Image (cartoon, rainbow, N blue to C red; front, side, top):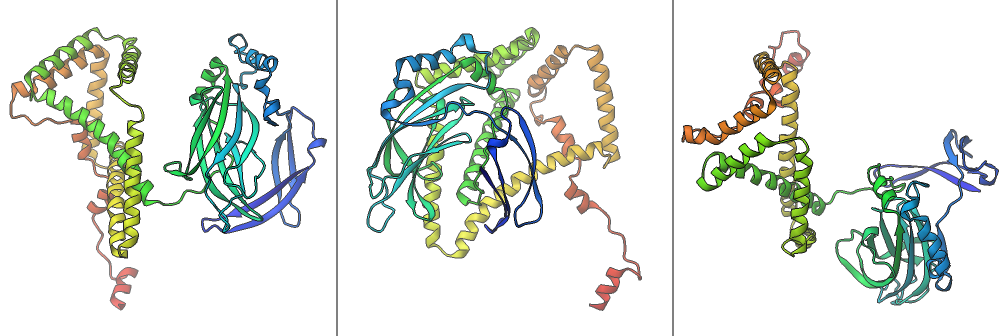
Length: 464
C-alpha cells in the first residue's frame, strides 16, 4: 500500500497537512502508466497523478559474505551486461555500483553520555538506502553491501552519517560526496567526514569499498541529455558567505575576460612592438586561411595544451577549489569576528557585498534594456541610425565575403595607433549602446506634466 501525504509549506517554515490518500500498488497493472484521481481523506480536493509500476533491478542490501561482485560468475554476468557489444541494448541502464559500508571511527558524540547512535544514509540521484543503527558507539561497524543502478555516470554518491534520536529528527554527524568517475574499484578507502556544506572537515572518518561498472557508450549518450532532477531539495537561505563567494567567482571570470580584452587592446595600441607585430601576423594568416573545420580543431588544440600542462604539473586542477576553500575559511573567520562586533559594523560588512552585487546587476540590466530600447524606437534618431547601418551591412555582406571584412577590420584596428598615435581605442557597438537610455534613464529624463488645478495630487498636497 502506497501512502501519500499532501503538505503546504511557506517561507516561514510553517507546514500544514492538506490531505492524505492511499494506492494499492498490487492492484495496478505493471509496465504501463496509470492515471489516477484520488480523493483526499478528511479534506476537500483530490490528487491527480500518474503511477507506473515497474520491477526495480540493481538495488539491494546484503551482508559482506554475499556481496554480488564477490561471486566471480555473477561479476562476469554483470560485466557482460555492460560490455561494448551491448551498448545499444537498454540504453537507460548505464552501469552498476556496489558500495561496502564497513565502519566509522571517532565519530562526534551527540548524546549527553558522550556516545552516539549512528547509522548511514546512502544517496545516488533519487535512490536512497540506509544501514541499521549501532547504539551507544562512536566506532560503529556496519559491514553491509549496497548496490545501485547507475542512471548517470556523472552522479555523485553521498554518504551521510546521522545519530538516531528517537522520535526527533536525527542529528547530523558527517557527510562525504564521491563522484562516480573518481571511484577506484576494489580499493578500501578512508574518507574524512565533512560538514553539511561539504566545505570543512567534521569529526570522524568512514571506511568504504566501492566498485563501479558502466558502459562508456551509454554513459556518453546520457551525457547529452538533461540531468535527472532531485525529488527533494533543501530550501536555500541567505548567507553572507555564499553571496560573497559568488561575487568573487563572478569577479574572477570577469577579470579573466577583462585581461583578455586588455591584452588585445595593448596589441592594437602597439604598447609592445614585438608583441603587436606577432599578433598582427597571426591575425592576418589566421583570417586569410581560416576554414570552418579549424574552429573545433583550435578547441582540440586548447584541450591538448591544458592536458599537457596538467600532466607536467604546471597546473593543478584543485588549485582553484583550494583557493575557493581558502576564501570560505576567511569568510568563516570574518563571520566569527563579526559576531563579536556591533550591529552597525555587521550591517556595513553586508552592505559592501550587496552594493557590489547591485552594481553588477545594474550594468547587466542596463545593457539588456539599451538593446531593447534600440529596437523599441525610444530614441528615433538612434533607431534610424541603426537601421541605416544594418541596411549597409546587409549590402556589404551580400557582395563581399566575410573573410575580407574581418581582415579589413583587423588591419584597421592594428594600424589605427600607427596612423594616429593619439587615437583613443574604442568599441563602436558599445559606444552606440551607451547613447541609448535604459528604462531608469527614460523615467529620469521624462518630462512631468504640470499639475492642473483639478488634479487629485494637487488637491492632496494643498490639503497637507
